[in-house]
Image 1 (cartoon, helix red, strand yellow):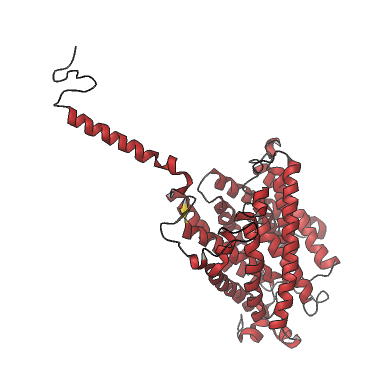
Image 2 (image 1 turned 180 degrees about the vertical axis):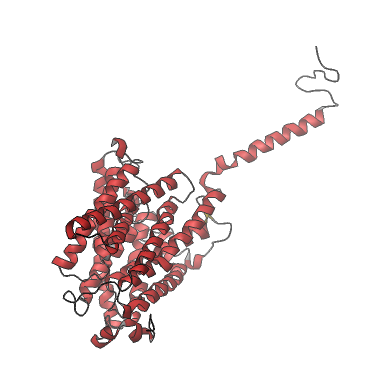
Length: 451
């Protein structure tokens, strides 16, 4: 029995109710279509959650350089050179920012060939507030990647700290960013040949740590040791400053690795988790190893182990699980500890702040370990899987080895040429008397401390 007021008219209803029903029907269709837009648009739709997370990550990564790395390195040098280190970090930040705008971003990430991008994004051409990269605004993506471009040459200054001219540092960093960093970034993240091969480098094992570490080693060899090295002790002048900077690096690294997911999702969460685990494992391993070997655990050793754990997990952070991170951090603490002692004690190479044995060696280990612990067949140590088209550990390790070898060789060769060019233009090293007086007074006419 039907309710009064309704009668069948084919598929319709009474004329009294038809307009209301049609409007309701059309509104429902519109709501369905609107809700379906993301499904059709896929990754081109702006996601506010992803955007908020990458905004935060960008600030965290810049925080790693200023003030994190500046304080970490500043505390490690002698009193007479502390201000020079702080200014070098500020100077590099400023110069790289401008270079990234003028063409660095375009060379790294715009369409080009397998080795270098083009100049279609010169001066961020065409980049608007409405421009989208994946699910985040393109200006944010460019800024996030800029912070990586800033910290990489800033890391290198640890290899020639306390003896290179400020003018040489600025010229070297300028050329190095364009000739080394931008091409390697394109190879790995910008659609270049290593990305096409399936190299796993989530947040910069090759792009940041191997390039910075190898460049620092080459610079240390070309520059020669500081006056008095290795006979004269050159301990850090302010470990409180160094540990403060190290703590900032640890926290900032969550943006470095977690932000490299470019989304607020489970991949970012796992990257943060494994980053923390590896940092803790690296710090603890170095601390206990040093304790056993020399009788005392030092603050310097512990924070260096933490940085080694962070640098080593970086390329693997989006591909491995917690168990793999524990092993990677432990290996980092052991291997990097011995690498530091071999470099300074056996080889007598004055890589002043241990950039190569910590970042370079760590980046190499982490990039190779990603090829193992990304496997989904290792039980409790399984990761997220290999690159597309690769099904075995040996296959992924082959690609990782090619990536490590190519990036290290290219960086070493080009860095050597750049240093020779800079030497011809400005000279590399301060005079012997200037080095004795300190770079603060010689280079800047200022002092870090007024006693």
